[in-house]
Image 1 (cartoon, helix red, strand yellow):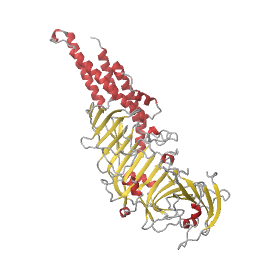
Image 2 (image 1 turned 60 degrees about the vertical axis):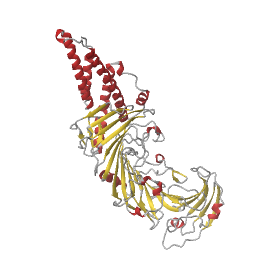
Image 3 (image 1 turned 180 degrees about the horizontal axis):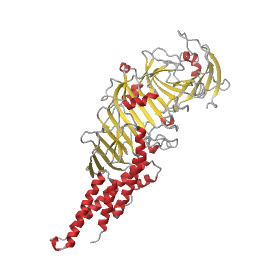
Length: 608
């Protein structure tokens, strides 16, 4: 990588740093001053480092007992608006550097970085190879502000691929798609307490990923948002995600931290693959106030520079805590389709809007603090539960053939922005009697403030689930989805057969979306939209046809003409059929609705 550099090999004997305890040479070299201060200006090689030109480096050996090789070089930064260089100090912690071709590696080397070459440390990247297999098991990125340590990202590679963080200029690029949200792994942030030289949990602690089927991809994602238990949701609603908080100065309120928000996401259809990663459909976002106190959360790593103890819940505990988290409010999210106005997905398909973080809540309508972002609002179903819960349960409603959050008081989905920027409408759901189920559905088009149809349904046909996710997802994938798609297609076909006005060309954006390689769940969503379009056309046609038939009846005493009475009866029976169809359709009785449509079609074509 640095073959083009001008190599200046210089052996410099550094002075011993007085120390009252036995420590490894690499720890002594990078020992911080009180308060987490780390400076390069007092290093005996600093003046020579200042004389380096971009691309030059020199090699030196530590004078500490059993000291290893080190490199000091000058590099050009890549993430600044104006040109700037940086001094990079590399320590060969595991002493495997080739003296003939000295360069750093990514298993057990440490990189100390000074932006601007002013002697003030800005970043430190440390790779830790626990089992000496030349593959890093842990990785950390320390962030200094004005030379003072403020916080750090830590990563644990749990699936053995050696991947953790994507870096540029020796800091996290902010693009975790290029890092490792795939398979089993975790990252977490800790805040540095300069008063006692310790780490404490803050922000995302952890972000954990789980490969539940052994295919190398993650099917579950968990994120804890950590903030002081005393923080104000009103004054600082996204505390855990604010750089000014986790990179600002230490605050005494940070001595009592809590899990203030949990995001818990699932790949429902199991379609996450290497070519189709991060296929999350469903997620819970929960806010509460759980003190950050978990068994074995204090982690000691002897190969880490001081402080060696970090704080994070164990990877194998985070899911269980998420399941039983005492939430003051819960948002349930289901990603139905992408938003054509966004490009926030994987770099291979950015317009697909599948996020590595999973599926989570919004910052609109009902606010759940410390939710984070980025947010997709269109084609994402939201259900809001304002009451406390310590478990989350789902139920199946035959009204819309979907899984819902039991206890949700209201919900909505904004429909549209499919292949273009056009809004199509919205569906709203309400629990009108506080029994934990939605009874009311309101359907809106984008150009109307009044719903074009309202469903007030019974809930006795709802199906409750006990929280076994595998059983729930199997039922959804093997029963709900195939049946929903089949009935959608049958209804659409029947609607289109009634009249030419019910089979007008589909909007190009919907036709285009259907032709793409999409999941069964996404296909069902598009068919739902088309079914509702055809329903409105069908309803308008048959209502208008029935009214015209009634208006054409002669204004005379029908007793004098049997044909008039027969026709009057048929027109009335057709009106009742239309009403029965609407009742069946609104209650999700699609098979019955199809039978009634067939009857209506026969009535329309029946001769006097």
